[in-house]
Length: 287
Image (cartoon, rainbow, N blue to C red; front, side, top):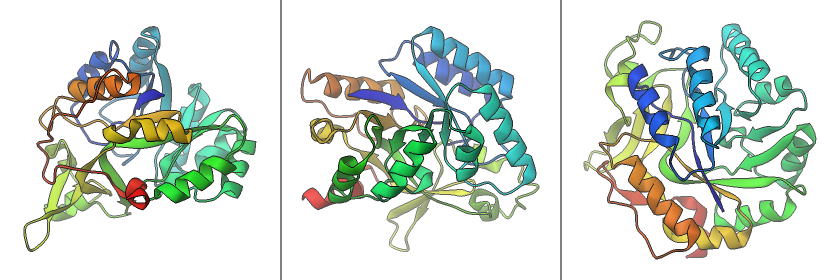
């Protein structure tokens, strides 16, 4: 069983992004996903910056994959996507436009491609997919069916830790809540390093707003199911980044690394984010 660090979903200062990935170089993870998935307006880092980070991580022995936007809305975004595809060894395709531009080269089928049946998996495999990230809403029975139907040699990756990506919108939630226009947003999403928590009228945490993305308020944490996933045939677990204000991310990585190695029973440090931890829907069918 391997570990990956998913793409950074939040808008941080350029120096903070560099510091985060520099700290990942010696971390016990196998793969690191780079790039912007949520909003094309977030340009704190240029393509050359991402290339420099990729070079440092590759030198540390990490597999580096460039993630693509989940919601394509403009010709300029397609042009940027084409540059990423042409410059990257491997991409994570989160939109079928990325699959088409990959042109048969190996890629990772991201969680936003919404793969729910074996026929779709086989189609993506024929187009070059060598790894598939399971949709977060799958239950255990549905995941087992897909694992049985996947093409030979295709790896499965499961989102095992982090606030769960739920939906994307053409509108910017972060800007709207602050009465800003999306086209002149002043990058207010950067004020919420782990998303802006939304509460119910009973003051229970429900969602997190992250620009055009809606996430779960609770943090999915599947560390106690590592052995089950390995037995089921899952090859990789994804840890989605957050700030150290929530809980030091290095401690999360270490906890999962111990669990993967089977060294001892471990738990992640308690999350300081509202809502705490949850298992998410993936394992509900097993209860």
